[in-house]
Length: 397
Image (cartoon, rainbow, N blue to C red):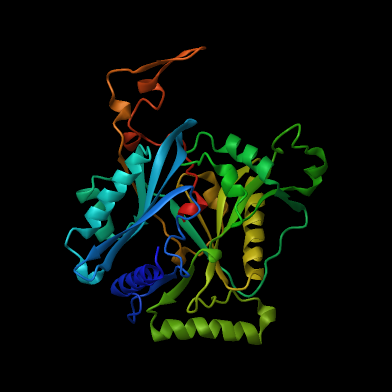
């Protein structure tokens, strides 16, 4: 991509965010800085693309969309090629011209060429224009509604009980653990090893009762009786966020909380972080707990991730996204006002493979495979969730 095109895409993103309310008083909006890399949000997928729409004789960039293709589970250890569509933007001055629809349709063609059988996208449940575009014009179906839990990072670290041990898990062992835990979940990526060894992954950590640590040998028993497990992804190296459009009163209250905290640090007030300047986010994923002390252990792990973020300058929040039915949800600390109860995921079937009536047969030296039957027998878009757990790929966030 030429440098001028990168600048044009960044300018388009800025116009869309300002047009959506960011920068207008009383209309708060999170503005994203892609840090000079328009494809940063899909770059870490092996198969990815960004499409732009040009308009007029000067080829002005008036629309953009990104996409990627990966192998992920539909539940019950079944893998399909799955496309993820994100970052759709159309210039406020060129809307209602069908540009968004054309971008999505062209991206879907590319996804099909790469073998994708389904495509999905995520949006805020209040984003009616985006929902209408995908569900009414592009034939997507409302599918899952995970919850996004946000905990702002303030000036103080938080204590972790002394009877809890937190251990970093090596990527190879973490891969085995996640493969066993999330095999029956939805959206678990087949290349989990690549995620866990990425430079953006700050580590996988397990919390166990300290008195049981000497009895646990992962070479003999993969998991201890009670434990909490999670990984931490550093999104601040990919993009930065900034809150704009806040009223003068709210701005003054947030600033005042930090001033008071600085004057009287012994009170350990949860002062509001400076989100009016650019800040980064730590994303917690792969959260799982088991055993009688599971909730307590998971809370301690989240505290550990929070302290990591607090010690990393410029990190303003710790975020997790989980299914509403996931048992781990109750153990994740968060501020309700800044969390999202329903993050809408929509899905569409791209491939007709599952509906094939004629079964193509492939003969090998050892067995005979029915190609038309080797994948899931039903349409995932109409299926009830086979698991209360959704694995949120940190690269999607």
